[in-house]
Length: 204
Image 1 (cartoon, helix red, strand yellow):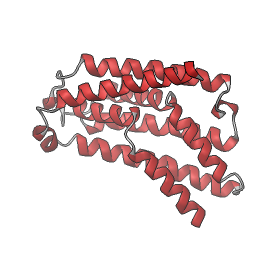
Image 2: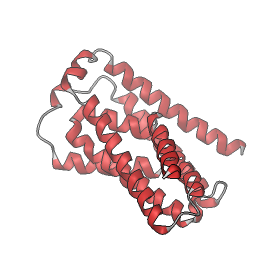
Image 3: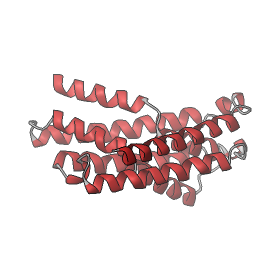
Image 4: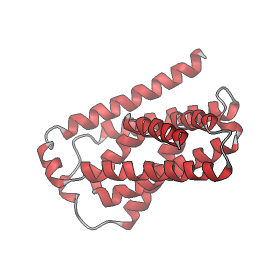
């Protein structure tokens, strides 16, 4: 139980640091409401689930320096550049009136796809779960199942909480003037992350 608490705490602390997944959930919630953004939340959780299973199974894609992992990093950098550019291009165009309207099924599925791509192309997720897997390597299969279920559930719950909080109409009205600048800042941060990742690959 002590090991479980340590692993669970480390996992939750990692969730608190904003990254590409956070920005995607936030913008989806602002532009379409938390119900549509819940699709992105599920997609991100599913991507995390893939990494969790891969880490516990010891698959080679999570080995730093391997060809598969390098390919994942390059693809991730490309996706960060795409999302960052998208944020910058559409900054200030978000219509807050759409928040709270009935959920569009097509928008939900699109958000889920973007969430999955964002999560699966995030090298930080791969390395993080690989490091956690090393902590529980000696645990039984039953305990690993408990860890996996807990991590998946917490990722989904946390992202849903973020979506609901940010998609609140009262909160959005208070920050309406700041939203364009927040979108620009988010886009710039994502592009900076992408360039830093590419720089690391080149220098490495």
